[in-house]
Image 1 (tube, rainbow, N blue to C red):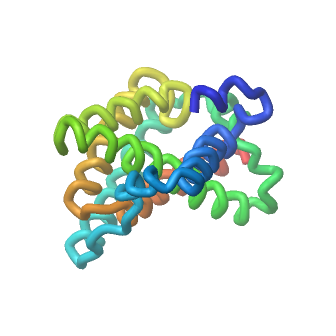
Image 2 (cartoon, rainbow, N blue to C red):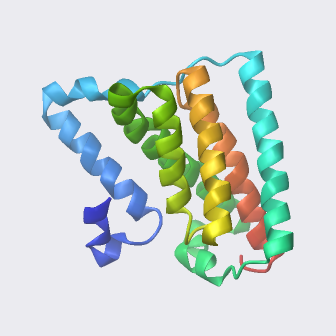
Length: 194
């Protein structure tokens, strides 16, 4: 990801997330011994309890994000400038594309590659905490923004990491993250930013 930031054309969403994965999968495809590193790429258990918990996480994250927006009233211009919604089609299509791609790429990184690498060396709970903290730091300039937003994002990262441990895969954390991203997109629409 750091190399992506060195190339100005790749600094915008979704390339800042997508380019490292293209490189990663390209290297894995070319080097057969690295294919064993793809153990993180799994759906996990999908049960009624897991779906219920995921729905609960989605509702709670919506309430927290709406509450954050209503009380903190952050400046959304920087957030809006980072995402090229106008190039994604109409307002609904842009939202669908953003929600699916952003949630999936962030989860592939934080609860996928990074999670698996740390978990193999440090165990589940260190990994949940570390990836949650990295997720929070990554949101200092995202949404929710600022120190409070980073703390909220870190707590959300802990929650998604715990869901990843419980289900053993990425599907339900991605779905929960899609709910949060849909709320963020709705906040941008409501605020007149889209």
